[in-house]
Amino acid sequence: MHAIARRQRRQTQARWWRFGILAGLVLVLDQITKAYVRATLEPRETIEVFPGFQFSRVSNEGIAFGFFPGRQAIVAVLTVIALSAIAIALAGLVARNATVATGAGMLVGGSLGNLIDRLAHGAVTDFLDFTRWPAFNIADCGITIGAVLIVVGLMQDGEEDEEAD
Image (tube, rainbow, N blue to C red; front, top):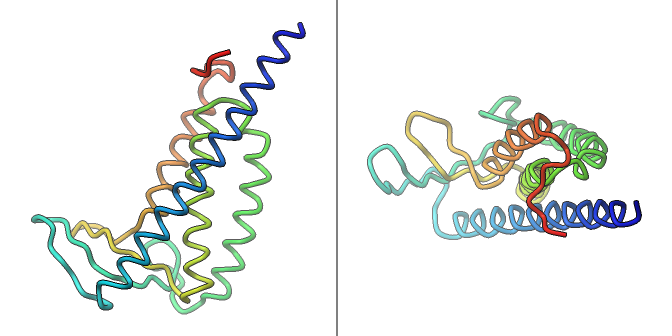
């Protein structure tokens, strides 16, 4: 029984480390790429990478897809409330399995990245631009992929993990 309890504690600790590392990684990559875009591209400037994909500096003052533009204070407050609720919900789920921990880290890192933009710059900097889709950024990728991984992880058995003893 003690060996099982120790193994479960080690797995839970490893999942929290995974969560923290991925949240930090997504946040740092997001902030570095946004700073680079702000330093090298003028607002609305576009550089075609290949047909159908370009780097475009876009300031998104709203939420996803530009909804609620010009309401930064409300969007920032709603983001903090949503992030707090997500953190509370995820606190119990991160220990469930490595997939949930991975997704939670990505989602939280991305959410923090966009919140920092809203607070520091008054808008989120988007730059990955597939011509038939609104521009987005690394934080948005983390949020989307993270949410998918959380759903997948919640559908898995909580004991299925690749972490070694």
